Image 1 (tube, rainbow, N blue to C red):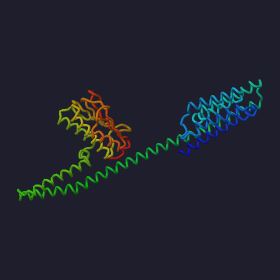
Image 2 (image 1 turned 90 degrees about the vertical axis):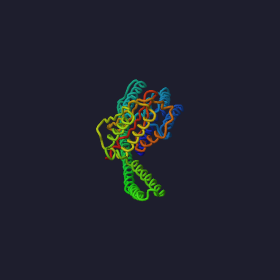
Image 3 (image 1 turned 30 degrees about the vertical axis):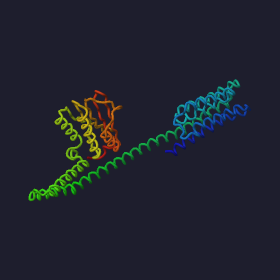
Image 4 (image 1 turned 30 degrees about the horizontal axis):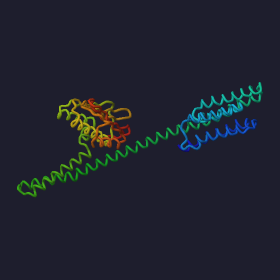
Length: 379
């Protein structure tokens, strides 16, 4: 892409230099003065300052360039009206990006040159009538060719940007799938080895305790085994949420809001909108944990009467928002806890975003969104 951009710039520079030389050489020779030479050199230097020496060159034509170039051209035109067609040199950067502007400028310069000859001599010769279309045709050809190169360059840039975005999305999805698969493998390995082993140890110790009920060391060993069994199960649950294995994300959210209602009396419910699509396992797990953390915050702080969990399947996004009608707060002044940071990190790791909207007395809304790339995997 950079090579195409450099090529476009080279054609622009060549167009500017050739047109400036062709249109100013004759008037400079006839004038025989120093000031026009200085102004032409100044116009060339002014162009170089803005488009040759700047790194990177500007994407758009800067207004200061047009103003300075226009003043230099007006100075030349005031000295000798033969410098009229030099105006196209100032407009060369526009000609590169807008072929219509370039064609209008070329035709205007050719017509202006005929007007100048008629104004200077009182008549127009057939040779001049032939030369004017040649000026217009040569300028229009240069404008058209260079604009074509510019359009090809822009189209290639768009295609390359789309290809790069697709490759990055695919790589991110593959990374997420790999992370999810590894978490599932770890969960299975821990469950099949450590958890099952601790369960067997607990059973053996319970059998031994039945025959030796007053053995202190046996009681301590049994307590330690039970604690480690519970810890291993907790790790397995953290790696692979059981609700998702059983029912999927929408139903897991419904169960979450149902438990909130049953345990607190809050009017909590879940809304699912859009057409359900397969969602990569890791994305499901992270969204569920965000919802659980948001609901936990409502329990602790909000004093809400109503909570709504909304999962929206859009064309290019999956959005989860948890809204409550509680006390609310000022996000700009509140000191956020560790939970919000963890929720934001979960979304950012998947290429998504997390927003928090609230105001004193107006409740709060946690909005987690994931791009379409995260929806490519199957549950």
